[in-house]
Length: 189
Image (cartoon, rainbow, N blue to C red):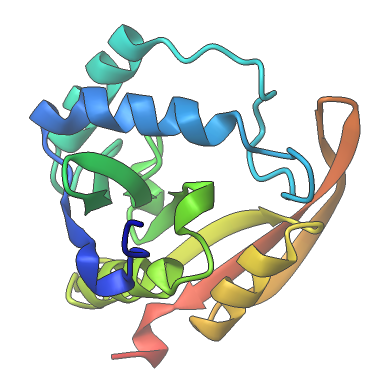
């Protein structure tokens, strides 16, 4: 019998260009569980969507190579040995230099690694990094109203609801309301 994994078994580090194939495989595995059985829908894509690994690699290589210019992206990945099992990303707007003080957060954790504290650990990692960046003032995110576990995680991390868009997305025949949440980094400094 194998030992159940614990949060301390997982390593978190910034994604590198060499990690992109593992990241794409993680996204594909995770996408297949969105809305499956009792799992809430957590992505704007259908479970049957195809992710183009080559296109993703091109886009991410460019975004990860930027620092504080429009379109930068940083991704922290959680690893179980050589398997990428969770991530949290910060992405700046690609087109609006006037929004460089804001960043968008996205997170994905694979089904077998949920409810063990990995989400909290990833959130601490990314918020601590963001607080240290003087140019960043806000972290924004969107979460579906039906995704109660994610909403609880974000609220416990200090995010507050600042708006809702009713019927924002339709995924696999389901209408999804999008809740916009925000974290004021200046209040944490």
